[in-house]
Length: 161
Image (tube, rainbow, N blue to C red; front, side, top):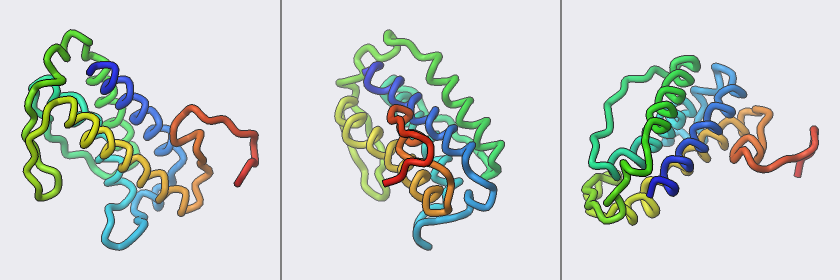
């Protein structure tokens, strides 16, 4: 469960930092749709879901944070969450796959095994919010592509589909 959660969440946080570095302050208030969260909130949610993808598996509470939508505060928060995840060890995750996790998804009350929680709820939501931040920035003209989203792809300068 450690390998399926911590490195994946750290990768998402790393890419959130890359994307945030490409954002201008005005882009952080942009939205894909009026009824959706703005870009800064999407980054806040990436940090939140990085914690939600790990700490409940250990039986730990997710700390509440009051992070502003300021680019530098968001950056500090993403880095702090990354450091917190990097302090976790595989031993911390003993019994995590079968631990029962009761939580809310929107207005739904859920009770899932740790494995189901991680794979069917926490990780999909982590990547969803990173995708929304990416989509907002891309729609606002930020110079980003798939390489900045996942940190794995590579394309020559100026390449576009």
